[in-house]
Amino acid sequence: MYTRLFQEAKVVLSNIKYIPSLFTRNSVLCYEEDIGPEDYESISEYEEALSAPTAHKIGPFRCKHPLLVLRKTTDSSESVYFINGIRTSLSDAFVDKTVHLIHNPTYGILTDVCEGMLGRSFGKTSSAAKFSADIVRKDLLAHKKVILLSHSNGGIISSNVVKLLLECPDIKDSHLEQLEIYTFGSGALSHPSRNNLPHAEHFANGNDYVARIGVLWRAATIFGEIFLDESRTGHLLSSHYIDGLLAGCYGKRSRLFSYIKTK
Image (cartoon, rainbow, N blue to C red):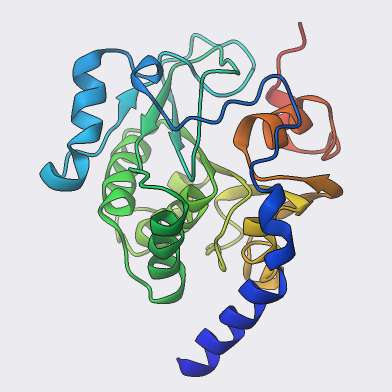
């Protein structure tokens, strides 16, 4: 364990020069605030999200401002969930389908980083991961297609969600075929799979501090293709990742990119 922690500390410190660019404003679409009341369907859902740390109330809260521009669908047999990460704002991109936010409470950079370390390095499964796995499992058993998107620390949670699902005896390969995982700037050190399932894609910027100490550092243990823009900087979901995805900066082979609705 100590060897692993030493290796992690070495990587964290060796990439410290990338920290200043984490939240650089590269776009007029960039917002600095965390998820606020305007990102929820109602004030009551926002209040429930705020009470999550003490009352163990964790989503899914319905986002009024969804995440991406995806293909338009009226298919009720499809569920889309998003797990937020550090300083995530959802108010600048839009989806043509209902997106539910599984709110991972954020308390600032330092606390969020510590939470991420517990989730990825010590195998601590957060209540958000357990809750997420439960609702995804129920949807899969109901034969629904599930799209799970996540950013930053949310990528660590989604990795643990898959781990928990693989441990469920009632989740078969036929269920995993209906699950799609998409992460942005993930801090995860691993992403499990079974028989090359579920489908997974990971988007990373070459100069993103979190991705460099996460998904890019341990690429060999990450199942799914990593779509990398080596020259791109920053960690913010909107201005650093969504803008890049919409512009084709990560290429156009991604299944997620194929969902994008061209206006």
